[in-house]
Every structure is written in structure tokens, then in C-alpha cells.
Length: 328
Image (cartoon, rainbow, N blue to C red; front, side, top):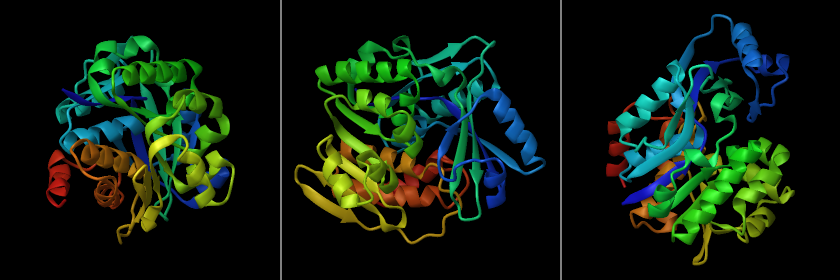
């Protein structure tokens, strides 16, 4: 039985600590994701000079699937990679975690795998510059229809809305999986997707989803309001179950049975990259293993708090995930 199938980009992150002035000098919007090409990526890397850089696999939905697998689910991930060093690195990490990798499509070595420059300011906020590479357009051939029909839940990242082809693939996959009885979970991913790719997100949401993840800024941006309560009311019409993360204040949880605010964790953040991905992975793992929504959010808060006390969007080892699971 396949518990969770993820569809998203395959990205290798490079984490770098910077000063606030670097973002200003490069005209980069703090706390958001900006799509760039390989030329701009090389330019930014050159401007970073001799700063220490840390490489680790990433990709929003990939991080979520990795976490869900480590927390006890049987998972699979559908994405595109190039036959290059970054592609091999990404594939090995997913395979070593136990994620079914048969839906990871390898492209020719004439193309490049996606990569993301994660710029971390002293306040632990992350700003991302992403060159999607072969992930730019994810076609339906990447997603195995039989796995869509077999999965209990399909998780889709909002970043796919940046491409018309990718958003069409996501929408078709969701429809096919839903017809087979699967739940559909989606994340809004980033304010930039809402501002610049709203049509793609709307297509992916279709007539609504079973589970929706977003943070407070994304929620209010989607509803075009500065009032979170208004935004939540609107999003409840889109999702049967809604999780709005609130940083150190925890999360708002809504479903047909009620609404809860789950408290946050008291920690000192180092790098907020991957917090939302970890929250979604932990939450889905808990829910698909029988936890109630509020309890799943509490576990997800602990997991997200743990990942932001270090650099990188994933915990150092699978044992770290298992240790977190043992505390529930």
C-alpha cells in the first residue's frame, strides 16, 4: 500500500549565511522565492565570494515526502532530474531514506537538475533563488497513473504553478487520484506563487482539496486581505482541512469538526528554510497513521521547530526523525 505520493520539483539547495545588505544590493525580496536562470545563479554565486556554502537536497514537496517516509509512511516521489552531479545527489538521498524512486525521471546530461540558493540572514529568515533546470516543466509522463490510483493521499507543491505544463500535470493527477478515492493535499508554497502564478494555483486547487497547508502571509495574500480570520474563512471553502502555520505562535487548524489554535515551540531559530515542508510531512504522517488533526499539528510544530534549530531543510539523519516520533 502506498500511503503518500508527492509531485513536485527536484532541487538541490546551497545554504549560505549573508548580511541584510546583500539582499538589498541584489534587489532580492526578503523571505520569498525568486525564479532565476543559470546565468543569474552563476552571477549570485560569484557575488557571494568566499562565504561558506552547504549543499543538501531540497525541493518543497521532496522535503515533505522525505519527512513523511522517515516518520513511518510508505511514500513515492514523482519529479525530473538531469543526469548530473546534483541529480545523482538528490536521487541517492531519497533512495537511502526508503522513498520509492521509480517515478524519478532522469533526463539527458545535456540538461541540468534544479538548484536553489538559500540565503540566510542573521534573523534566520531564508530568501530563495531557484533555477528549476529540468524541473521547469513537469509533464504527465513523469507521474505513474497506477501509483496515483494506488495512493491513499497525493501531495502537490504550489511551486508547480510556475509552469503551465506542470500545473496541468498536477491538476490532472489530482483528478485521477481523487476518482480512485485518494485524498488530495496541497501547499500554497510561497507568496510569489500567489502573486505571479495565481491562475496555475487555481487550476491545481480545482473544485477544492482535502488538505491545504499555508502560512499566515500566504493565507492573507490569497484572500487579498490583511485579516487572518477573513483569510481562514475563505480558505475553509477551498479545503476540508486547513493548516495555517503561525511561526512561533504555532498553527491554526480547521476542519469539519472544529477549529483549534495549537501553540508553538519555544526555540531560537537558526535557519527557517524547510519549516513549512517539515510541518506538512509530519502532519500528513501523523494523520495518515490515525492521529486527530490538532494532535497532528502539535507533532508537526515540534518537528518544524526542530528543523529550524540547524542549517538545512532536513534533519541530519533518519535516526533524528525516529527520535522525534518516539516523543509523540
